[in-house]
Image (tube, rainbow, N blue to C red; front, side, top):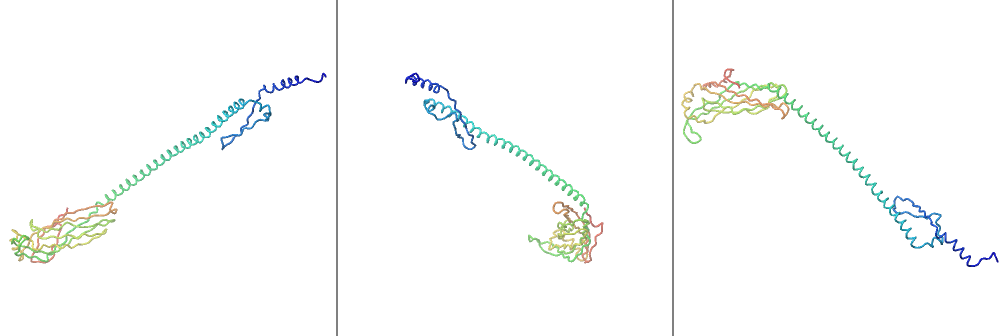
Length: 304
């Protein structure tokens, strides 16, 4: 029958219809879903790519080649993402470090400036305080304690035979008296500490008695009289004994007092102090026969 076809024709038509589908090139589409945490991605085939028997009929070599191409693309994209993920924190960290370094430098500059300002303020205060102390010291210098020797009163006078500390026989002297000294502190704002060196009584150049003013504190604008005991016990006279023996029964003995009075004024505590030293030398005559106080006038003493 004309409508009927032979088996060979059907086979050839089927072969001719299937050959273009095999030889035709199929395009593959891959959708890659982005992920923040994981470096892997899910690959989904496009709707055009249906799992048909024709696609499965492709050779293993074509699958492997496409898979290798896809895996190469996937690895390159994933490695690029990893590198970008690693680089971004480093860049941010570098920026943060640079910014923090800049802030540290600024803080160091501010700290150094504040230190300089503090040192300058301290130096200014020290200079100002030193200047004020110098002014106080200069203003207090003229206020020197006024010293005046008032009287000397003889209590005991004896000349006799004796010996010195080595046992040599000689004339010895024993004398006892009281010296009165007036002290006045004219300073209006500070007191003074008053003391003295040993007060020596000389017969010509021979020391025959000694004493010392007791150290004391004298307030501002204060006036007082201090008594000092002057005595000498068994003082060897050697060659001067003959003169004293002649005057023992009512004669007069020329003597001289030599000493120094020291004063210290605390103007601003222990920071500002003023020192004054006054050297005093008084010549007078002791009347052995009288126990009356011997007054001193201006011509009797020298103050320096």
